Length: 348
Ligand SMILES: Cc1cc2nc3c(=O)[nH]c(=O)nc-3n(C[C@H](O)[C@H](O)[C@H](O)COP(=O)(O)OP(=O)(O)OC[C@H]3O[C@@H](n4cnc5c(N)ncnc54)[C@H](O)[C@@H]3O)c2cc1C
View 1 (spheres, rainbow, N blue to C red):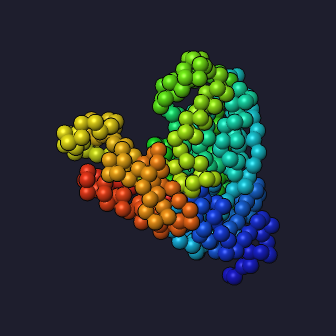
View 2: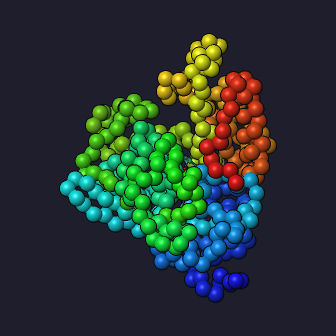
View 3: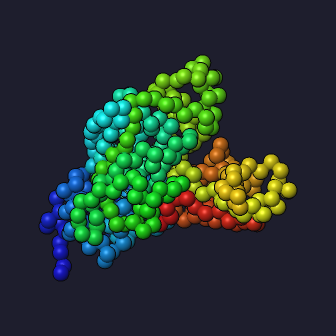
C-alpha cells in the first residue's frame, strides 16, 4: 500500500538533505530522507510505519566513524533522545543516558558528580547510542566493561526491547550490532554501571608521565585524570571541527607469527603486540609512517602530521578523494610489507 509518511509522522523529516553537519569528515553528501526520533514513542512509530526492508537504511549517530563516498539513496535515521537519569545501589551507580546525547557530555557530568569509570574515555567523539555499537575504547578502558543494558526498538516488529551488556558479543571495537544485529535495532537508551569509588587507571599511554609533568603525582582526582586525557588527546589528534577526520582510519593488522618474524629481521624496531601464540598485531600507523605518508597530501585529502593513522579532509574533499588516498596508502603498505590494511571506518 502506498503511504504518505508526512500524513502521520510528527517527527522531523527532511528530504534531499545534506549530511555535511552529520559526519566528522565534513563530506557534503546528500540523502533521500533524514528522520529523527526524540523519544521511545517516536522510535516505535518510525519502526512501525517505515518500510525499511524496501529501501536502504543508515542509522546515524554523530557520523564520527563514517566516510560517505556518494549520496545515500535511502533513509537516514538519527536519535535525538536526550536526558540522563541515575539510580544508586550501594557503591554502584546506574546512569541511563539518551542515545542521542553527546558521549563526552555524559562523561563530563559523571566525572563532576563523582560517578566513576568513564574518565579514560574522555573526549571520544560521537553519541551514546554508538558507544554501545562500537564498544568505544581508549587508554586501557572499553565501554563494554560498564554497559549494564541497552534499550532499543526492534525494526522488525516495532517492539521495545532490553538487551543486557553481556548479550551484545563485545570484542575489540566490535559488537553484534555491527554484524547479525546490523540495522535491526534503534537504540533509545544505554545504562552504564559506574561506581562511587574511584580506581584510576594510569598505566596506559603517557598518562603517568603527563601527571608527573603537571606536578599532580600518582593520585589524581577524577577531574584531573579527565583533564590530562583531554590534553593528551588534543595534542595528538586533529579536532574534527577544524580538520575533518574520523579518528583512526585503519585497523591494526594481525599477522601470522611466521610473517611477523620474517618482517622483524628486516625491521628490528617494528612495534608489535602479541595477540595469541600464533599471531602478532602491528600498528597500522607505523606501517603507513614507514611508507613516508605522514603529513602528505593527495588532492584534497591528507595524512595527519602527528598520527599517520588519521586521514584528514584538507578542505573541500569528497569521499572519493579520501578513498583515493586510502587506496594509495594500502597499495604502498602491501608493496613494502606484504600486509593488507583495512579501513576501520564505515565506508558508504
Ligand atoms: C578525532 C577522533 C578520535 C576518535 N577516537 C576514538 C577513540 O579513542 N576510541 C574509539 O573507540 N573511537 C574513537 N573514534 C571513533 C568514533 O568516535 C567512535 O566510533 C564513536 O562511537 C562513533 O560515534 P558516532 O555517534 O559518531 O557514530 P556513527 O559513526 O554515526 O555510527 C557508528 C555506528 O553506530 C551505529 N549507531 C549510531 N547510533 C545508533 C543508534 N541510536 N541505534 C543503533 N545504531 C546506532 C551506526 O549505525 C554505526 O554502525 C574517534 C573519532 C574521531 C573523529
